[in-house]
Image (cartoon, rainbow, N blue to C red; front, top):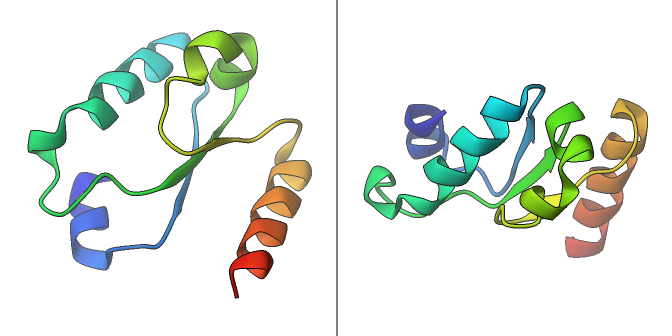
Amino acid sequence: MERAAAALDPAWVVVSLTMPESLELALGWTSDHRRWSRHTPRAWWGGPAVANAPDLATRLPGGLLDGDVDAGAATVDAALARRR
C-alpha cells in the first residue's frame, strides 16, 4: 500500500481491517512517518477489527466507517460529494 500511495498519490484511501493484529499493525504503520515519501494518505477505516475495538481504532488518522460495506460506501460517497 505504501508503494501504491506514493505512485498514485490518492486523495483518500479506504481500508478494511479484519483481524485485531491488522489494527495494531495499521496503528504502527500510520504513525511511522519515515515510511511515507510525501504524507500519510487520508483514510477511512472499517471492518471487523475496527468495529470490535472502536476505542483503539479512534487512534487511526482519518475517519471510521460503521456498519456493512453498503453503509461504508454511502458514507464515503456523501463525504466526497460534499468536497466537490
